[in-house]
Image: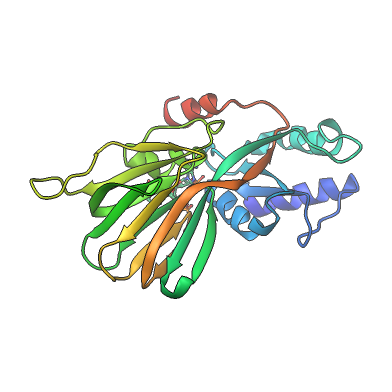
Length: 257
Ligand code: NAP
């Protein structure tokens, strides 16, 4: 289904004189599901400031993949005629991203952008992390792990952990717990926290163990971690909005209808 639809899209856009340019694209059309959009985002993450994404779903309605296969005609017309002006400017909606910086000893660091979330767990035993907000100690977390999500990722893993659904117009990140241990010795807030764009969260390990850090569908093993810094990224993901499909309508159609 996805391949057939992709071939049909390529054929019709080529007829309309659009050129397929995987190296330097202006519009990225992901055909599949939200997972496919996550892959497309990471493939083109270095172009994120100037490309626009659009998602067609071939299974259930997605949050990023919100065009139905039956709407192919409308999508092709919108791309080729409707919403692109003479300068090639499209009607765009931009969503916040999460910046994750893993800092190791000797100043080594790696920076990642997440569209949905970052999760932190250990490869052995429970996760023990000091959580700082704006350089102030907030709590020592002990439990299965922590999930830090974007607003558009709030309907994914975050939702399964009891986090709130956050509208993507709110530039923020949300921290949710995975099975925290709360007793007379260990204490965590127990509620999801939502931080605004000018706040930073640091996770500082208490032990020098290996950590499993996920960035959306990607999984990394990080050793000798000094701290992990999480904040709203300065970059945003841009979606081509060829027709209105309000976020709360997508939430209702995905989870309630
Ligand atoms: P996957 O395990 O194959 O699929 C995860 C499911 O999450 C798919 O049904 C996917 O939708 C859906 N999804 C992805 N982004 C979403 C969003 N923003 N809002 C609502 N649903 C969303 O993994 P994957 O396809 O590689 O996706 C990785 C994502 O899986 C992670 O970013 C994480 O959010 C999610 N995940 C969730 C849990 C959980 O809820 N317990 C656990 C691990 C990972 P499609 O079917 O349309 O692709």
